[in-house]
Image 1 (spheres, rainbow, N blue to C red):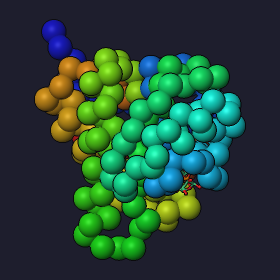
Image 2 (image 1 turned 90 degrees about the horizontal axis):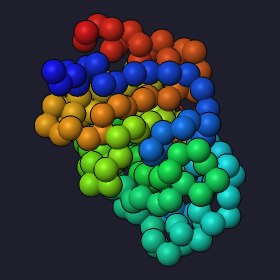
Image 3 (image 1 turned 135 degrees about the vertical axis):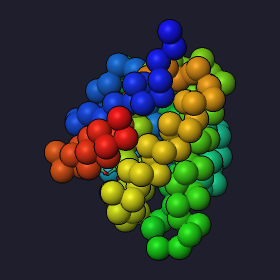
Image 4 (image 1 turned 30 degrees about the vertical axis):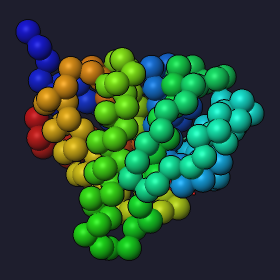
Length: 174
Ligand code: AR6
């Protein structure tokens, strides 16, 4: 029998660059040329060839996503998405949801079975973690309801406090 969407998602704590999955998502900026936070960690771990491929892509608007190879990462691919800078506007939620939807759609088109997201926009871009968690989980579950790929989605949180927010929210839905 097919698994329910809620049984295909999982929250974990750790460094997303270490994950051996088909693809990890990067919380990038519109230049796609690297930066701090998880973006910096991914570029450092993947190596200089990633920057070359990103240069050829030529940028990505907020809310959209682009795929590259994973180079030196254990992950085969990287899906780069650009989250909104949080300003408390209704568009923030829409743009963050679009990041998750467009990343999942790219994964689906590229036959990606296992996908891991960081907490897009929750660092430098200032999105409150609990609100972003609701958007991430709801948008992912709605996508998985309608598509068979990806089969497994990991939300990779950096801190124990962030992990607890996700685990509590997912447990309340189960
Ligand atoms: N693994 C998992 N999560 C991580 C890691 C890691 N290795 N490193 C950081 N995080 P941020 P944003 C968490 O700031 O808010 C960059 O400069 C971190 O604790 O990386 O979307 C880009 O170039 C936080 O919860 O991304 C953009 O300019 C989450 O990842 C801008 O920052 C996202 O924090 C994007 O800002």
